[in-house]
Image 1 (cartoon, helix red, strand yellow):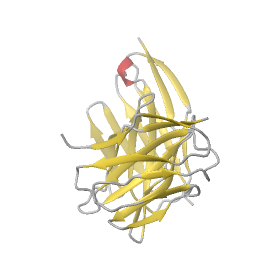
Image 2 (cartoon, each protein chain N blue to C red):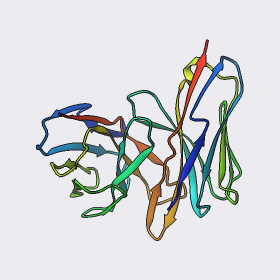
Image 3 (cartoon, rainbow over the protein chains, first blue to last red):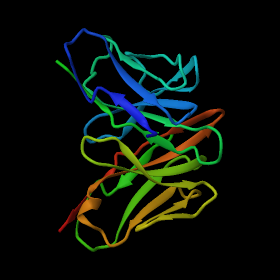
Image 4 (cartoon, rainbow over the protein chains, first blue to last red):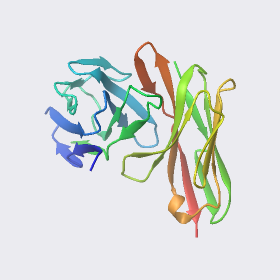
Length: 114
Length: 114
């Protein structure tokens, strides 16, 4: 069953703790993306990676870190430096070959920090 | 920087009506444009991808048009059903060097009343 999985679905943390969100894809896609969604707002890009062992900052990278050690996996760490970490986090992947470049999304992780 | 506006922000219609959702973007140098659907608390589902060289793309009761030069896209939904109730997001894809980045609007929240 092909697709993108994110875990966990819900995550609760205390302020000051780092937390890592998982994203895995079995679509053999080159590029992977992390977005953040806040109520009533569109998605904002945090980080993206087009190839293993390489990634770039998006529009709101401060307080976040990522790694891309395997093509299938792109975990996101929300650090204690992120001032407003409570949000809905979405991971996406995309093939960079062929004509479409359609992005596919996972089911999301809702992070609540108190 | 690309900015995306979706009008209206919310729309409520009786079942069976045809409706149009509007999307405008400021930078016409796009590679393609995707329309997504998002149900509450869920990830995004890709509905249609329209390439920059295309004018229209159809899938079932959905039809998306693109006027790249004027920075506009519309999503037409025919014979609306209660199951169409969701938030609809448009996202143009900018190609800049090797980057492939989507910019999202805030969405149109559609409610179809039975």
